[in-house]
Image (cartoon, rainbow, N blue to C red; front, side, top):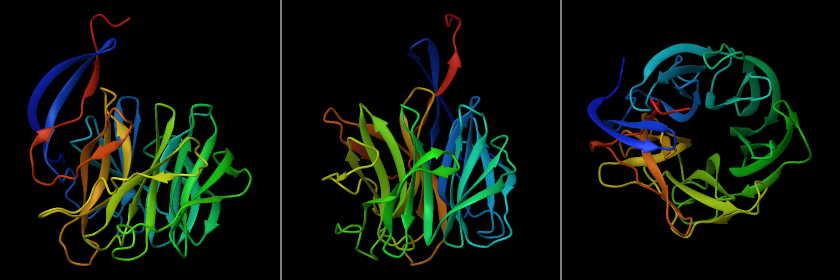
Length: 314
């Protein structure tokens, strides 16, 4: 069923499209015990995959939306017969049209594939043992990079790929827990997600213990997807506040007006446990290229834009 939709419509002209800045929203947008969301956009619809929703953490279910605000439960898309299936990422290969699911199962990172975003996804290959939180990034030149977290030590690592299924060269550690906010309640850097803005690479990640209210989101930048990366001085950019606990482990995605949003989870309470739900809030770049965000909960705010073809479109 849809979650937390409110009618508030404004129209904006963006390029050759009319953009409907369609809705307001209020977090949580999916009030279920879900975490670690990854969202893709395909053929005008959004597809969300997360930890949870399949007998606890035994697989992935897809949720669908037209606007990043209202989400509908879809089918189970991946259930490999193992437990502890966490932190999915789905990527569509523009060359073949196939969809690749990068998954964590029992502290092992692997890849599955399918014909569409609704799956089903079939296991193709195991990549790394003692690893979690895989994310696939395709650069403008077509080069592929798989970011993941090596255990022990919660070290964010990049592995170049020659194809969606094949590593190329050796993995390289690019971040590990060092800053105060990353070590406040456990020494953790995890949940990597890469975006590119004005030629600079922004690696978003989460730090501190994911079961604690101090879990938070920061980022580091580099001129290369391989690093080295420099942490932002104003980290963390999403963090706990009054009545808001443990915002973290999400994905960045553009709306129909080309504005960046961060889809992530928050903890329901300040207790040390795993009850979480899905939220969304905007990201913005300032004139110096610094990335900013703010976690919210319960406030009614202007929502993402949805692109519509206009009468003047070519």
